[in-house]
Length: 516
Image 1 (cartoon, rainbow, N blue to C red):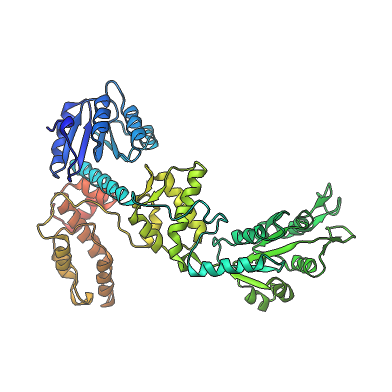
Image 2: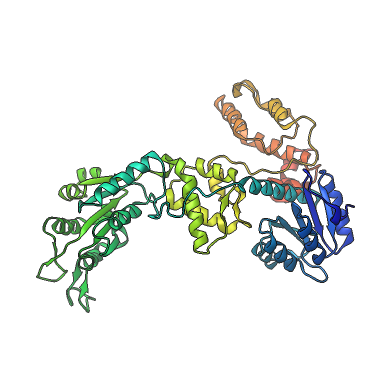
């Protein structure tokens, strides 16, 4: 057993076991040493902290309940000294409180006693890979200077540069601007930037979401009402246009505005005056109008659902906000900007994204645009245990959408044939249709799960194109047989890996007469 005090830095990962049970340390050392990892031991939390301070390991397996300093206390000391330290807690009590406490204080994962050897190796492999990802991201430098993007509009792409140019051109006048684009592209940020750089910046900026206000209330919201003008009008109300006198009003989602209200907006634009609901006097207002929509107003004009004269009044200058998928080069700086904001707001401590996670973010199509990206970053930052967002912290739907298969370690018993060679034996190397289904069904080589499934799907699609065939049943049977082989016939582990119950697995075995 290596002496903790003599463990020095090598190219091989070093794993430290902190547990007051000598038998547990011995068992774990045997399992972990099978992968040629260097293993060190500590019999208490205090001894473990001393080892970590003198020679930080790549991974720590830490017992939750020990004599003296507890596992949670030890974890807190270790993580306070090094927030990036990978720690896996070990416990015999798998309660919700245990899981919550473990993750709350920054554990990478936790494992139940008694151990399953494959489970230990799986967690160790995953944790060491995560550490490698964090090291790869350690050279990450903020792409933003402190004054960059202070407007909140992030982007250095050519399409965004065009947007910035138009913003600069319209700020010197009171021209009406129509901002179009999909939801979540940042239309209100553009409107605020126009206002902030205009001569009206010292006066109010009021944003009104026309889609969020019922038709029977929007006129009162915009123009105000007199006392007693309708049921519930117990007092006079000043509308947004009056409140915004001298400033700028932003009418978001104007395509959802009722025709009757559109008429009154047109009057404001033409005559510069409003009339409260139930009132008889007109009130002069000096307001610049900026409008936005994610709808096709030209088609709405043709369909008579949007006033043509109002459309031309609003559409003096148009700014088209590009979808995020059309400016993917802006995704890294947007991610950086979002992380900086989260740190400033003390909502998260994450400051980096691993290269693998960033690659997925760049490839994703982002139907919700920047708003969706910001939500994903916030969610991932909350789930990240350290200061780096890893691939596993991204939402499953994002990873699945770009075809990312979560990595998993190879099974205990793997054919000597490499995974790539096995794939060539079971799947077509040329046109998929040239290989019969039985060729794959007869193969019993265990294919490494980290391989891409795209070629397998091409093969299945080709088989379906050849005519009716029970392809799903063949696929299910083949998968069950392979997993049973990889798990040495252990039905419980096979069912867990397949994501089905043991009863369902036994039913399939009996139904197909499989020999286990």
